[in-house]
Length: 510
Image (tube, rainbow, N blue to C red; front, side, top):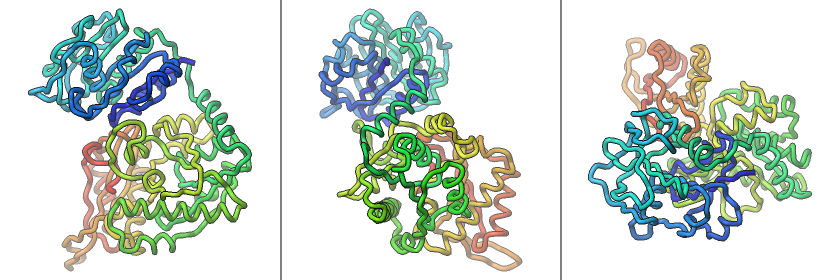
């Protein structure tokens, strides 16, 4: 099987590169930029991709790989920091730019005999850089530029070295897949030989090798990630898997009862249900910090899993539905990327964890998980449900968590989902939900002054969860949602709409 190795220099988009390459049918893996050359050589890559990154290639302590990567005789594509690194190593010059370039730019195609063969002129690309390539290395030719970046694309077809200053992996670059496809198939000569079915076979084999004759417990959250994790592991080890679904008091209206029925009967999984809502609410009393919430919830989940493992006669492995957006926002796993927030099943795990982790989806994005779910026979209605955070409503209730606030939020959230479904836009959205704010506002209800809570409504569109646009909801829909929440949810007199993209905001408020 052909393999593309991606060296990670700290870009928040590194895994997007891997996902897009796999989407094109070529297997890809991510390695830290510091991976020894001997290890890269042993992997026998068909091509290398150098990711973007937040630093300057000429700066003190900048991440530099072994220069021998350019002597392996394999095609190389540098993206953003990657193209600057390539130039820096091969005789070019990179300097600070007087006109930094962040956001959209129009790509002018100078030469379409190579990497840009199928790219239309003046197409939108996504830039994010403060340095510029001032001198092109010997052997390279300039094939693309933008208004502020003369060397936006450089190519050395003799050595099969290519570089782009923009990010072809993000959806904001309209013909980014054409650029990546041109590199993989036109320049590197690869063939699409990887599929989701081959991923399933590989993961089942890995799970069998990892677990051996052991037992696994898996925490079900009610979302597609943990369900697909369970189905993969069940495929590998059968009834040595026990799933645990915990009612932490932070679920949506009716979610626990509905999901328990589906897990046991529709999916034929061995599931243990635990009502621990009092325990979670007690531990969260007085906790305001989002990070403390996530870590408190994470520790309590693990405590309950350990207790259940003992009751079941000892399970050495804990399976989780961790996917890559969880990982990349929680800690620098592959390269020097910065922490955005901890996720309860990543950054929230306690030190001295008694389990060995099994996380078969750790390298996948949400849309890939959904494709995998289809491969495993999950029905589309379940697959396309909106993501729901592991810490549940605790991170949609800004400030302290208490029963009264949870009931207000649960009722408001249910109205948002009902109206989104009625409007026929549920499947157009990545997520739609309510957030309860820690503020009160003055209102007039029935000729009387009120001083009550404020609910924020959030609707976003996305393909992978790494970036998102707020949804321009129709005025009639927002009017229905607002009217129903104010009329039906006691304690709320104002509804606002969140019009923030990701970035700069995250999808969840906490």
